Image (cartoon, rainbow, N blue to C red; front, side):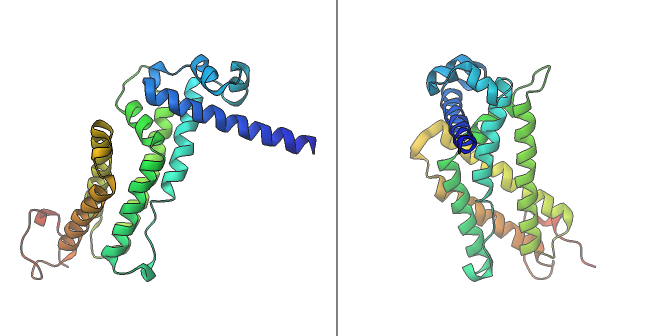
Length: 220
């Protein structure tokens, strides 16, 4: 019983520390986040923070990982019972947008770290790039599943456009606040990607030429 209580207390204190780090980093950025500031925010001594995390960069990496796990669960294409391929894509787009509204920490902190260049790369930046690659691979798998006739070059182009577009929409909302309807923007983005994929998957004789025609799958 004593061990279980200690374990529960350890989990609770770790979550308190991560919650405080999210709030501090959101207000002050990576540079402005310190163990002392996190300690003051969560009400736990610095020694408790160091018991869970070796240093600040380890703490920021944990914040990114925790938020990413919640977000990644939304990056999942519903099965065929949900409706047409487009309807399934739109459901996923809304789910991703809602998850970013609920848990934006990994993307907010990760983008800040990804855009910075330091002599020694922070672990948080490495973690963000790794988890972002995980999400990118999942999107690529969905594109392949929905459009099996696409060649790999087209799959990678569409995947890059999808992920980069999501980043841009998130940054746009961070700048402009609640006036930006992230769900609607993600749905529109998903429709554009779906339309582009459908055009790329069509054989030259089945659809009119488009600006994407150089990427069209070559006929056998």
